[in-house]
Image (cartoon, rainbow, N blue to C red):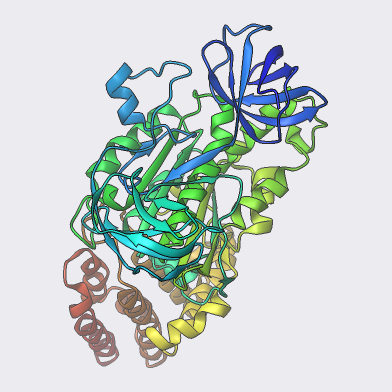
Length: 579
């Protein structure tokens, strides 16, 4: 096969080469600078290539070299703590070599190939190894043990295996058929890594955010969409999820976001402390930074790079949370490349296969039994940035058809300084039915009923607010005025949460349940007192109710809340005697 061709035509990031034999998705080097690209269409001896770097200055007639490999990522010890671009080039390493602006055509190893790791075998000579099986361990960071696995589809009978210090390219194990294995492996990004079976979504991802855990829970291995307009808090919500959710590893993909916003993330993440371990959060994080001014084709690749790294850690038996911010920019990259290819446009100019690509991405989420018999999961949380906040556009609709959780951010709530600005009337989760048994077994038997009651009160409040806007709250019957007060308590005490407060940023799921019960206890006690002659104003303004609501900002609140509720109920009962 001839592995060289010539540039025939250039259209932005899309280059056509002639006189070259290639297969679909072959990685090629384009032009005298060796720009990295990938074959995406074949027409006889013409190959259409999407180039992952800026194509300014290259000319027809320059050489194109086919590497014969598909776009793959390097997997092995050293991935964690790294910051990559969309095609897995380590940005800090390149910055040391050439400053803040990357030279075109430059390449670098995904991680340090010479770094020495201490390898501890988990198999012995004579054992039969199958693809995906763990053969040994490496302590990658203080908190994460990296399991060295045989490549899926490889394996054999172990002829020799050694413990000791190795770099990722040295042989650690040989097989009787003459093959060997190293700690590093490569995997094509567009091919999902195999597993034995996918489990039903019956375990929740605990996030520490009350509105998410209580009203709109997400299952481990599930998929969620966070659509929202500019400034509504998508990035902060995803950072809170990365920091506080009970996933063991985080893969954060900054896909096409503004440079200044991505800079903020890159500056803040290395300084975040993991609340579970007290170590830097980066010790269990891989970041992929691909800003909106970087080459558009690399933006399209960054999502696949991220999900492949997530699958690799899932195969070790870890729970991985993948944040994609934002999938709208990924779709825009597809639209630009599609128009350069002169494909027939679909709705709003997006390619006709947009929904298929979105589905393929989210389908790689899941809680699975891995090839080595362990349980691992990838939970995908994709931010969507619809123009003008209009979720009727194709990317939002394509996402909503696939994901089972919709956390709809609301610019109106953000303007009112209500954070997280998730609209409780527009959002939904399709997981509660399958998660309810877990909540009954692990939190409380009546957990699902409490959730339903809170949701119902918020729905009633929405209906009553329409009347209030016309005639004022004083015109309502006293029982409906009480409902408005209880709903306000749900909003201000329960749903509002300060993501930057040292105590309120994370709320234990058991405390969430106690807080919800406290609200309903207030409602029942108030109804009873008012039926016995108490005035609404007296009931609502008991001092201990304010103490209860402010107390959530204090350490040790979970230990004091029960006593606070008792005091509040006693004070409400006392209003009857006063009257």
